[in-house]
Image (tube, rainbow, N blue to C red; front, side, top):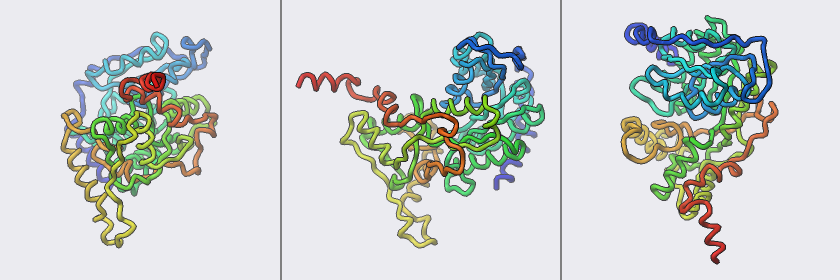
Length: 391
């Protein structure tokens, strides 16, 4: 299935969607060769490394760029054509001239080559949380990863880091998780010794996890789940994941291995929802799930479990209703793929290296979460203190 889809995508790209005219517009960039030279000095450091970070404009990508740039890494930040302003905020994360933006297109190999030809390491963070007309989950997670790895191999980039997902599984019910696993396989076909990073559900200031839970609670007074909400997750803080990637990049002994980045505690999805609701002072709100009766049904009727029927309808509805249009927020997980988070366990298997194995103590969602969620608290986070003082 994966091979057929990938061949079709490559044929389509070759016959109709090579961006020759836009490629000519790609401006050359001057990036000083700092290999063999290093200097310590905080923001003005020079690490001697050059890194290209694909997906740098996303939620996790900006943290990775910050971690690399603040120690003097020259960072190439590719952006879509005519979208150079989307990456302007990244330039502030490093010294003058150390962060260079270049235009690229995932199906134009020349623009990829232009972005990686001077790099010592390439980090692929490209991912999609919804299917679009031009880029499906497969196009973003498999085709793009394959194109980047192929070009990196051709130009001789020594180290490739592929950021995947902890629950990635080629046999998953979730298309999002299947394509994440296929993306790993494509990268491995070009880089057998590639570094694979599999983070659990990532939370942070701009996430699509605890912010979604809080938004649903504020709008509807409840959080909808497709299933019982008893699947297990180990939420990991975005800053810890970014620091883990930075640590791997600078330690050659850590290259070429697979990592599972997870938080220190394991919760059910329902427990995380209740924690968020209590944190934003909406303890009386609820978590409503469509029951998973798979265990009570014979094998031939597994597909008729209420959660799968409702989940299939929700996927169709969300895939047909663009995110930019007004309406309720998406369900937890990928938009139009309920199984990605509602039906999968996101817990480490311990067969691979964890954050604490590379010297990073992961932070708990119950410690970091209240600070991230305080703007959802009615009246501001000082209002309850004032009420208690009045009493």
